[in-house]
Image (cartoon, rainbow, N blue to C red):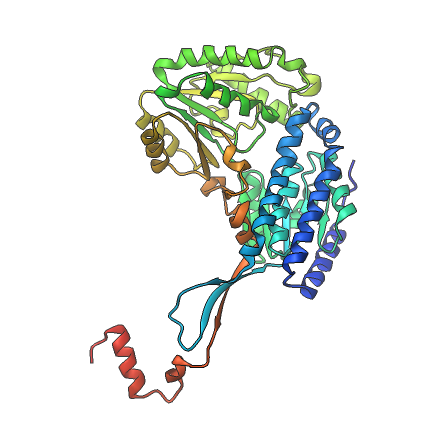
Length: 472
């Protein structure tokens, strides 16, 4: 179990990084590439111990899913950033009609010391992933993993401590008291991944120091299956992402919109496909457990409420699951009313509401009547239908005939909008997030602005009238 960082130790680490950054406020390209190489070494150190840590935290966790979803994205982002960083650091000329050899350009400079508050569902990926952008931008960083995944937090802490100087990258571990102190520091930027309720507290605390904040908050991500795409391929995609970490993924399908006329066909196909994927899910080592008993009880409560209200619930596989490992089977909730808790909250677990619609327009209206999600998924073989849905909806990201793939591409920014977050990381946009776009003007030999020097007389008046078109 991880040691708990005291608040005084947190503040001391922050002060040390502030001092270190002041001594080197614009690291060279070579220094930044070395930092990314060191982060790759951290990933290598984590990989051999990852399976044990995830299983200790979740009760059960698939090894391959752990490696792919916790580390492969970080590694691909490192590789892509290394290939692009030299170009990103080049000053970007901006046309401003400079005269006499003058030049106007933007130069991205590091912000300083960045705080990263990582969640429990991806305790390694989101602890290490933002460091790609943070370090590429030339910053120092302190990471606080979630206390709900303590074994993974300790794994990250040990690997970072082994490979990085604490004055550049440091990890602190602790609970709510430490998290509150973390948000109150005068960071140069703060990134929080979690839920909207906590995000409001993070924003309120950060506002006291005017700290810029990036929020990744998830939400109820819809999947809209058009009538032409109700087939095994579409439904297998939905089931596959719900199986990953038993649905404990912020960009997971939260509910599926299907044509009303094909509702029973969808339910039957989902049962058949799930049984072919997991003949015995509850006893499978591939099943991920729910992170803790509180969340297990929360999910069980959603299902109990639905059944009490007379809503049809279809368990895929063994309905009981394996409580000893906190494993719940995937359960479909058919046409639930919107006032159920599972339709109000982000589910974040192995429950899949199936909502029928009578027209695509009706489905789009349903999506737009709710908060803007972190991701939106559309299944159709008609490009016009896909473009129409995308043009009439708003979400952090989107996929057509796929789910969650956009988040794995290092070339694309990842972020939410509205209730699902603000700002983004990954790729060039991530580099921008943790950089300050500094405007620079360099005057040439000739000074066209000399006319602005007092005393102001007729030449300046004539220029003002000529530029603005003001009357005499």
